Image 1 (cartoon, rainbow, N blue to C red):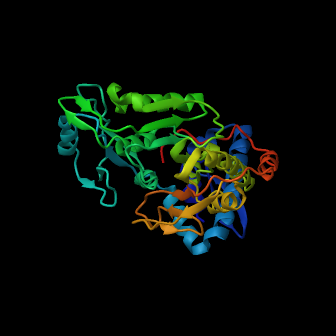
Image 2: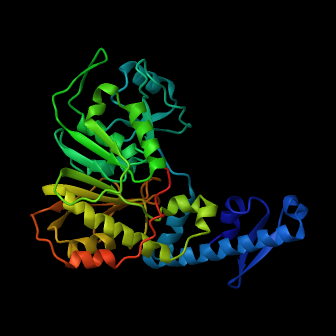
Image 3: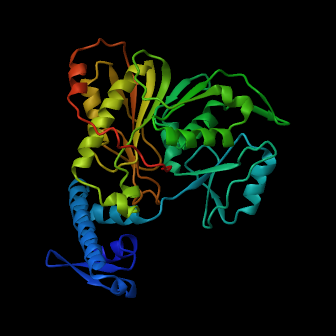
Length: 388
């Protein structure tokens, strides 16, 4: 692992660098800025740099155990790169503004494996533009997020819950599919469907961003098809045809590009996260109708937050469930579910998802109550406010 190159730019910002020699980390100042610091500040910089290097070593050891040393080296390198985005064309904006985007954005190429109009460019995307009705013409997100929504197998009359919806990209994609029967004619919308989406996020701050996305991208005449909540929802009755659970997770790609947050990483983080994810999923499966689908999603590469959580819910939930196995154009299969990793998917991801189908009514068992009490979960941990 090249500590010098990785942390030199991200962590100490030219104050000092770290290099590995005989399994010990030696720190050397390498800039005028560092030399200009007071003695106490130099000690603090060196201490922080050493801490980051040790954390990185533990982090790499943790994940190389899961992926193998060779695969981890390639995956680690790809995770350091900026997240790749595509531009999802908003079907609710005017055709004129869609055409303007397509004709003025250089080097556009449509993403071939998606069935919604999405484009990538070798140039940086400009800011989305509003049409004459104030609706933005495109939204930037990871193409893998669209595949996750596709896994819900949406129908136009479905009643859907997006449980952890902020910042709003996946809810927007859901609405692109759900309201597919819209006929656009001179800015009037005729509707011959009855689908409905509930988008929830328990964080008030994140929910405000969710509301803004819906306001910016969905015409007021269609907003009666969506309800936005900011609740710590507890589901007890079958209410929804489809549920998307985009669970809080370790978000390793984000951590690697956020030095301050990475410095807090510990191997025990995945245990805390997986407990919270299991509890959330155990509650969510009670909210789907028989024959309904739940898609469990994380942007983690950690199998303990991914397939191990799914295996546990299939074993312990009193709601009868089965995994729906599918093959997708990009990504790779896991013991349970599917994962899209940037080292093998042209920079897209990481994103893990598993499709669960409710196959019966089930019978409540007291064992579930004991499993809820067994966990001591830090409720302050939540996803960062960014779109995968």
